[in-house]
Image 1 (cartoon, rainbow, N blue to C red):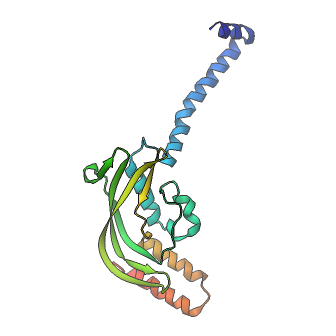
Image 2: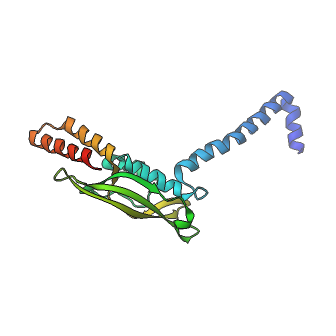
Image 3: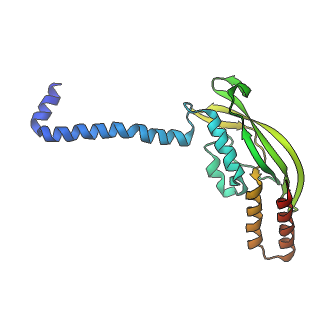
Length: 197
């Protein structure tokens, strides 16, 4: 305390007030920047269902259709790389089960959260074909604490992309295609995707 009194006498009261305001500003800014960091990294203080919702939402928007988008998914999953898939599940909608009573609680640091997908069918890359197969698919996402953060550790399943996003994706591929036979295949694929209900 004596050092502080000595410092106040040396620098004057005006500088002392500036110093106090600087300290107050730093402490007020810490919770704001800290919460943004936690929001992006899914710290254990957050609800693990938020992680699953964000991952499934990104998947529905087609983030996993491009290999260059892998960096976007890294904060959500524990696996090191995304495999190359031969097909995509085309979905109409999905529902993340938020009711904790319907989860499987493995431990305080591991839960299994179910997600229901309204699957319309599968689109195959090699043949540019769509196989309609309407069904409700129940996927159980295992979320576990890894390095102080929530991460999805399984399942590693093919992309589940929304119908409208797939239609737009095929339309974009058509604009870039120059080979007539391939363009005709893509046009037929787009029609099949539009008809799927």
